[in-house]
Length: 293
Ligand code: HXC
Ligand code: NAP
Image (cartoon, helix red, strand yellow):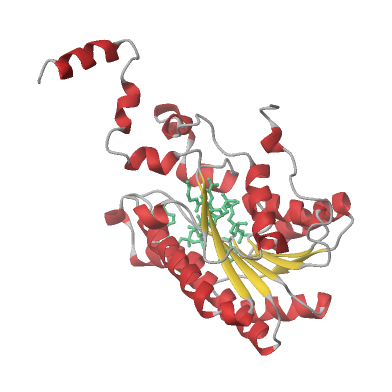
């Protein structure tokens, strides 16, 4: 097997032909990687975030590669007016919208007791409020127009385990996961599917600057926490996202797909620390245990 096959595009050419997809936070990082792949697969993509210059450059770069329109829209997801404007601009440009990817996020590591209430607010507002504003706004449009559609939310594995030092993000992502599962059932009758992806560490400037700064990285190698001993490749996440927003996944609804090389389960399993035991020591350990009969 080619061990780098996971860095290659996976879906059939034109798998997203004709779809209009809105990606919040689509100008950078994983949002940009998803946007690029959606566009290569034939979708028209709208990317939305606060920094219009960044969006414009990303849109031009991706359009040039794929030949498909990418529309940049300045939008702060914490503002309901901005979200309404995002929907309006999308419909003005493309006359329809089929998929919403709630990817925009804010995060940084900090002991919780050092946070001001404003620091807590800023993260929860981007991640949770931003997601429900967009989902509500787009959902109402789809329901009113009887339009089949889907939502993909980008969460993370501590949405269900919780995690110290990123508590506002953990609280907000847990809310996004609850929203995903709740509306997957409530809105299925309207033909609206909701799913989520829970990535483990995927190198991006945004996440690395705020979560794994250089000084910490030399002390705690990220890869060591992951059973597969590597971080994620953007294309493997883009492959999964493209599948989940495509019609090939039409029966997948309310699911959260973890893509983390086994990271969170390693932390969860009672005896996973035994990884540290040198293989030769097992003969000795077995002898000791058998002798206890
Ligand atoms: C403590 C901090 C802080 C820090 C900001 N604040 N940084 N408090 N420690 N390191 C406080 C400020 O003092 C202020 O509170 C409040 O937070 C708002 O800060 P601003 O700088 O005014 O906000 P803003 O300019 O809007 O920036 C928002 C941000 C920033 C979230 C703080 O980091 C950002 O723009 N992030 C977007 C991209 C991002 O975070 N990407 C990473 C996603 S990775 P006071 O009280 O002073 O007013 C991710 C991965 C998860 O989610 C899983 C990985 C495995
Ligand atoms: P990133 O590049 O920093 O992406 C975050 C994006 O959110 C940026 O493009 C940013 O653009 C946008 N954003 C922030 N605040 C916003 C606001 N108020 N309104 C609109 N847009 C806003 O980081 P990333 O690593 O690619 O993260 C993408 C997603 O993956 C996030 O949901 C993150 O939680 C999730 N995730 C990442 C990892 C990882 O290891 N990288 C792991 C698990 C989950 P502007 O600054 O222009 O607004």
